[in-house]
Amino acid sequence: MSETTPLPELHQSHMDSETLAAYFRDLEACAEIFAVIPKMGQGYVAPQEVDLRLGKSLLESGALLGLQIRYRFDGSEWWDTLIARGGQIRITRIEQTFQ
Image (cartoon, rainbow, N blue to C red; front, side):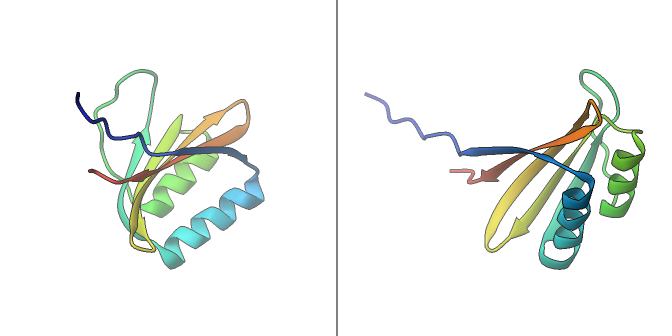
């Protein structure tokens, strides 16, 4: 019998513009950012990194389909994926345990 490691819990929500602005302020003030990876188009797009402020600007302007932000907060590593769809931003957050 083999042991399987349970998958980390996913958290999903939609963000309005005020919540999105507060989210980016909190990241800048409280988190150690590792990577900000834009999703420029449909399907696989070779990853490239941008800084947090440029990623925010591109997402808000509609130039991106999404953005993945990898960061450390309160001793844990988190990966947040923001997807722009239908005038809304959906966030999916997962704690990376790498065990």
